[in-house]
Every structure is written in structure tokens, then in C-alpha cells.
Length: 134
Image 1 (tube, rainbow, N blue to C red):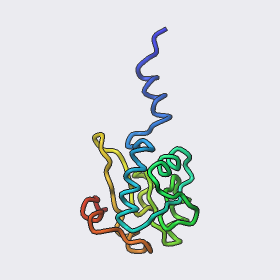
Image 2: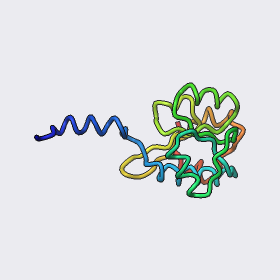
Image 3: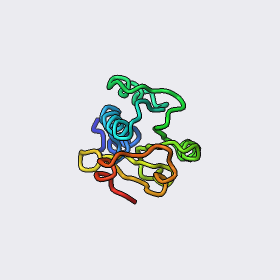
Image 4: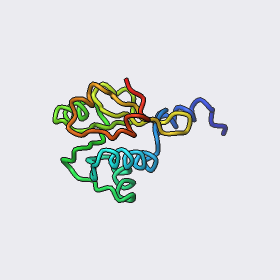
């Protein structure tokens, strides 16, 4: 039986949305962000990303100043606590400080400058230069 191309594309879309980086790629970018702002631990509840972060030597601890969020509600709550909120989807950008997404096969960093001003964690100069501000 032939599996229609459209059905295959829809099925794949359920597991990996456009703009998603793999957990390993995301972990590398998060490590760079953490090092750039002097943070050595990250709060993350996503199991695959937690494992990738741990493999890179990043401590995954609740209550860290840097937080990986996957929902708008979680991001808003963490933002109100002054944490550096990092997300993986542009649609969460209004509640985040940093968006990490894939563009053309490479990681792209977007910076929400309004939210960064209210964050207790300050990004390094190098990150501020390479990130696209909005």
C-alpha cells in the first residue's frame, strides 16, 4: 500500500514542528546562552532536553535563573519572577526573553528586548550582538 505524501507530511508535523531544533542542538545553544550570561544551571521539564543538557555538563535544577519553557502560561509565570525565559517557538515570544529556533538548518536566536530589560539575568555582549532583536 502506498502512503500518500500529504499524510506523511502531516504525521511528521505532529512530532516535529517547523522551526524546531533537536534536543541536542537546543542544548548546545542553551549552553552557549548560559555561558554568555554566567549561568551554570537551567530549569527544564522536557525529558529529552534535560538529558541533552546533562550530557553537556549543564546542571538542570528547579528554581534556576534561566528557564526553558514550553507553554505560554509557564513562560509568563517565570517572566514575572524575573527569570531569563527561553523558548523554542516564535509564538511564545511575547512571554519570553529569548527564542531559539531553526532557520535554514541553523540555530537562530531572537531577543525580546522589552522582556530582557525586566530580567534579573543579563545576557553577555556577544549574545546581544548575534541575536536578532524584536
